[in-house]
Image (tube, rainbow, N blue to C red):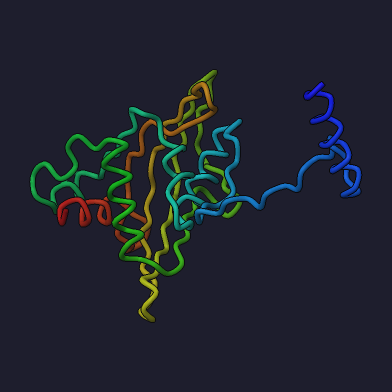
Amino acid sequence: MKRAAIIALILAAVLAGGGCLFEPRQAMPPHDEGEGNWVVPKTPKDVFLNLATGMSSVGNSNYERSLADEYTFVPREQDRLQFPPGTFEDWTKVVEMDVLTRIKGDYQGERVATFGDEDGNFPMKDIQVGWAEFEGPYGWTIDRGDGSDPEVYSGTARFYLQEGTSGWEIVKWEDIDVIESYPTSGNLRGTFRAAG
């Protein structure tokens, strides 16, 4: 008896309010943590899109999700020799994310990352089932946000990617050459790791 009375009261309250008990609720606005749009990495090229939004965003999620757990960075030998011994040893995903966080802390203005040509394509690539290698240009243009000129770090690199359970991810980034007179990403990475 009590149960029937409670149900009747609930139904009466809902009907009096002009609503329906089974109406869908209003969607909550998305929670923005300063991340760019995540592209599900169904192709290797999607990884580069996520690295770019990960660099430009306040948050690091897109960049971090693009790196395989066994990710490593390898500098050019010329860059390695500019820094104290051990600067580039054991360069893991954790090291990469720590360096990226510190770069973003110092360069709080606009940060733009590009990979491949203007359309995001690479001149040389080797794609197999579950594995891909790309070789070509990249560029990081980063701004401190203090009115000074943006800095450009650019070079040619080999990117090694694998297809994991959540899609494609980068396993290794290997700087192999400079572009014009710009310092490479290895120069920037080495500067921040050596200072830390």
